[in-house]
Amino acid sequence: MLVKDHRKRVLEHAEKIGCSTVVSFNPEDTFYLTGFWGESVGICSRDSTKIITPALETNRAEEVALSCEVISAERGKGMLLRVIDELAGKSVCTDSTDFHTIKMMAEKLGEKNVKVNNKPFTMSRIIKDLDEQENISKAAKIIDCLFNLSSEQIRKNKKEIELLALLVSETYILGGTLVSYKSTRFPFIIAGGPNAAFPHSEITTRPFSTGDTVIVDLVVQYEGYVADATRTFVIGHATDEIKQAYECVKDAQQTGLDSLRSAADFGNVDLACRNLVIDRGYGSKFIHSTGHGIGLEVHESPWISKTGKEKVMPGMCVTIEPGVYVNGRFGVRIEDSVIIKSANGKIDSPKIRNTISNLNSFPKDLICLS
Image (cartoon, rainbow, N blue to C red):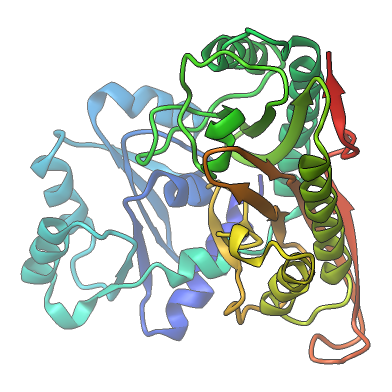
């Protein structure tokens, strides 16, 4: 990971809004600047990059952080006060959203010297360098292995929680790690039958039954970077209704991928997917956006929604994941992680053609498991 290039990129964006120094409280942003993921605060200027961390993390930070000064401080308020000491006389941009942190920084440094703005980080992280792309690609390959394991293990009477346990174990064996979310207690989505009608279903002890669709939505992290992909299986025979919905989602997903090669902005990518689903009569059943950016977080810029204005640009890593959900009965979702590799012509040209790399190779044809 070329953290020196990352720092340069973030500082260039910060300087555009009148700040000479960036302060990262979010672990993803600190990792982006320093290569260290842990309890810490990152401070970066043209002159130096520093990590403020409690004593229990100091030795690890010194081993991991690249060309950074590591400063030990007491946890809690002590760390914040040390951060403020290091920022004296500087114009600061921070990603913090904590009220008390921002208030103390403004009181000590002066309100005019503190800007709460995460855009220098989000605008820098939206384009992935080759090392970042390689890590996301490796995470996606682990997901493909987990899909293969799922196809071997999903059977009638097996419980969602049992499949989760197998996939979690295999993730670590394959060299991946898991991502945690505040909005759910589980790292993966495994949803059978009526549970599959909830796009963000939580894991239950419900056993799979004949006729179920089973959504397996997996997020795997590799060296800090994540891939996100989904496949939908059927146990036993698929009804005509399920087949029709599945083909709709599969065609819409392919339409979204094709649109990435020609669309100028992500709003048009979403509309390409969504219009096909609407034309097939499932418009009211497609209840989320078409996709999102992936990187150090599973959901980050760019956002692939019908109101999305961000331009499709080389180096972006995104998901394409249309779905159809029939409340109380079944759901279908198909998702791949994709890298936009290059663009020919100007970004605002109607003739723009992007090349893309689909990182997931597990089949998307309907798989019925006995």
